[in-house]
Image (cartoon, rainbow, N blue to C red; front, side, top):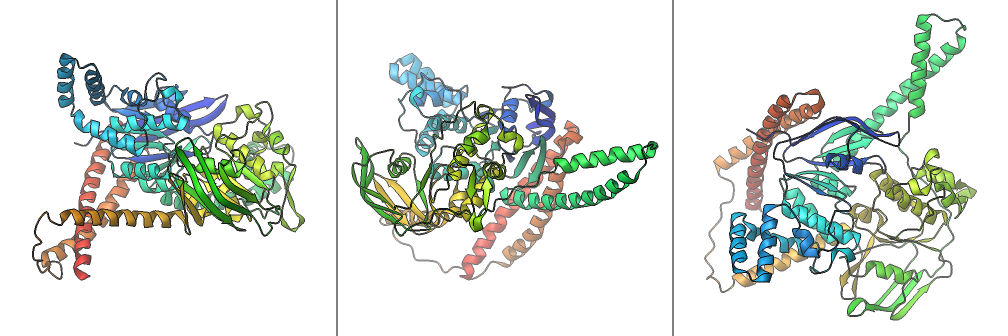
Length: 631
């Protein structure tokens, strides 16, 4: 008998300052689900996570958890004891295995024989020896190597990595993650993506990393204007279905506009004294008018910015070096930027990417070398620290302090208010005080102040942190059309692939490599190189271990039995996929079903999914064998 749903949410509602964040939403999480929650900034994603965690009460609704369910959380600001060291913070858990490991390490330090004996027994009982090895592996992957450093001196990104490491070690049945990829470098994100996608662990994630959504998620929940839309599948499926729904909504709006014109003409012709039927028709007309007023189409951004012309010289760097004590950031680095360059900067945390940008912006002084900007260059630098905004000012006042208008081509211009609308600040939001804005909204406002300055060289250091998917798409649209030079540091691989066509790769110890291609091209080549090195190492190790055996002549095709099995598997997989889709459709609306019905459907779903995975695995094995024999 398969497990019951881990979580069922029914008619959940929450308001903030009389603003409905979500109303009567419902969803369910089943064993093995990998679900992403996406929404615009300020729509209530984090609030929903906090409600599920019991940190905030809902206004109404039900949250039903399975019995004895182990739930883990990774918050953007994990609760850590500032007096703990990094290792103590990771082991500060009620997980029995981590408690045993903590006691064992403490007993080792005190050399108390009785404590050591008890701790050793606990390690054996909870199989914590494997956990000890896993701890070392995770800390290495997340670059948590300064184990004795107190938590109080760590950055926000380092603290978040501690919370992530602890949650991965606890391995709960259901893991809830709030923006897990923020403040991770690209290597860490790739590792986390692979770890979670291979795991059978149930996940609920708030994330806007599009490649992460594509690789990990099996379902996307979109919180939009207080309601929850469900999209079965990964990010590609989400985009396709969302586009289809947008087309359907536009057709409905066109039909309602036609009806509105007809009803408006009828209302204008009616005499003042109306009967009951007339009054009902007028009320229906009023409701139709309200729906059309509330309609807000997706924003698109097409701006032909008229920026200052770039001269022949853009930026020349010659023999640049920088170090902080024994930590070498740059070593004799030289590069010449040309007009239209769109360069991405990648490398592990701590290799000097942000320091390099600070050197270019004049915020850090080099130890040696020259930085020579062209006379026509106007630089805008988007920093991780952001702009120090005055909380008492209105959002539009902050933008207008930079400029009232942004010049466009053909003598046109766009006002500060119009540009703010393009970046999802509607009329009401423009007049809100800065102090009331969310973190993502403040970053969006900061970006607007830079763009209103009309620079011709943009330096962007992690511009996508705390941005929602719609804002990311708008930013991408702007940058794709941006005619100036661009230098981008970002952990968002999707953005990096779309915007940057060349890379500067920071490999550590001051070494920087120029790569003439996209991030995905570089990643593929790097993976192939690593695999080739592993193969060569394995071959070298095998030499001398055993005498070479005479190779057997392999068969030239599959056996008759294997060919029949391969054919039957193809049709069986199609049938199972159809059954799975049908069950997903029935499970998509848990609020309309009893818990017993959901349990029954869940059991069927688990059985079908298990059989499908087995069939797909066997089909892949036979297909690869067939391909190998044919080559």
